Amino acid sequence: MPAHKKRRQTLAAAQAEGWQNGYALGAESGYRLGRCESIMRQLPQEPVPVWDKKVLYVTSGKGLPYSPLDTAVIESIRPLVRELVWTQPTSELSLVAAQENPDFVLVLDAMMLPPDQLDQIRMWGIRTAVWLLDDPYYTDVTLNLALAFDYVFTMELNCVAFYIEHGCKNVHYLPMAVYPGMYRPKAVSADNHRAVSFVGSGYWNRVNLFNSITPSLLKHDIHFSGLWWDRLASYRQLARRINLNKWMQPEETSDYYNGSKIVINLHRAFDDEQFNNNSRGIRAISPNPRTFEISACGVLQLTDIRDDLSRFYIPDSEIVTYASAEELRDKLDYYLTHEDERREIALRGLNKTMREHTFTHRLSELFRVAFTDGEVQVAAQPEVDPVL
Image: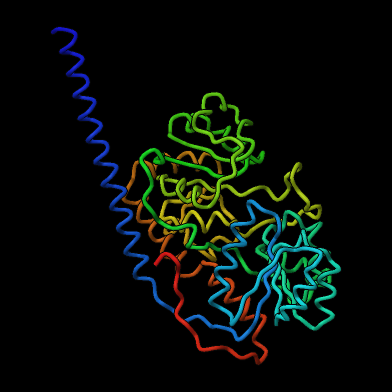
């Protein structure tokens, strides 16, 4: 056969294969999104308490990756109170409080907050609260901050007793959550599709685990995004699949998750020797923000085990866990070849997340704790998620 005819046949075969693969990808993606949409539309429109309060919210003041959390908190508080104002943690915070005269001040993180400003606000009889989102990794710093607040909310269960033992009053466990306006099921472009992804910094516990399953990293279409992934032993071979030293905004991270068949979650170590202000060695047992953000996108999450995880998701039904590098390797192999099981677990995880683990749920609980001493509520309104 002449060479030009062979080239035409090869090209035609490649085109036919491309159409077939594209159709299969589109069908799989469309079916998943249709099921996700069905779940989102059937979410109960539960009434949420609307408190007759004016709240002053003080942002973390840190920029990325905290600024999206500030946005999530602000947008979630608005429907829950009579009035919300927000400001940065500046040296003029007390002046803002004097002008606005809020009933309650909520601070996120508080590491950038000038302590004297909070003292002045409390002298005026305004109740204050802090929500600590980096426990236990910065407890050497946050303990002194927490002592200055009327209410302390921590995302780490093991830190509740720690703060109480050191003199804090009104300490409560308030886990992390997701803001559906940022993380949700959605269609993404074809070039965003991949088998497996991991988003986050390359702390050594993560690098060491992935180094131990290098053959799987090379075999599967696994992509990384974040700081320090050039530490991987197979970095040169994986470089084209790594967005090195990149901070992604929530919209892009959500695209990354939605384009993946599996997203790996691996929590940072509580005793990391390089990046740690946890000299007391408080163990971390509560799930990180990614636990909820990944599940909110309707994709399968493979996560390492945290002792408190089962409070939020049923393992092997709504989320999949692994206890070792070998188990992670084996479950990657299994779920990449068992599409129906992978999809059904992911959909159950999406359903649980949107029903129980949004910022609206968490902030409603925060205000219930702070405002249940005879305070007046406005008539309850149905909860409305921004994606519905």
